[in-house]
Length: 109
Image (cartoon, rainbow, N blue to C red; front, top):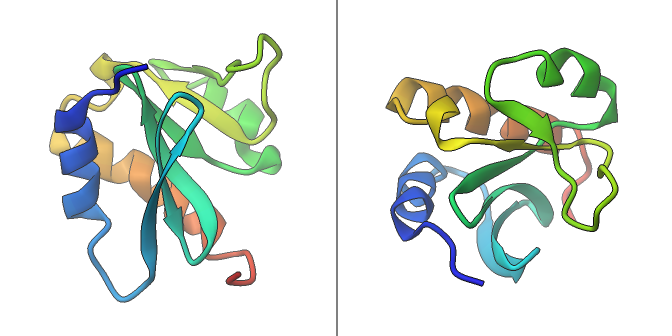
C-alpha cells in the first residue's frame, strides 16, 4: 500500500534531533520509531500519531482527527489526521510534538 512520500519527508525533517529515529514499514505505511517506540507515521495520505490512551478523548475532539481503525476496530492511543489537519508546517509540528511528548514519557527500548 503506497503512502504519501512528501509527508514522510516532512516528518523526517521534523524528527531530526538528539534522539534515535528509525523508520519501519507498519500498518501498510511507514512508521517513525523514536527511542524504540512508534511516535508517528504515514498511512496513505493520513498522518498517524501516537498520543497515548489518556489523551484520546481530548485529541479526538480536534478538527481532522479520528480514531485509528486500521484493523476495523479503533486502536487506543493512536489517531489518524487527515491532510487538512497537517497542511501547514505549524500544524504538522504540533501533531508531531504530541507524538514525541507521549514517547518521551516511555522508557527507551
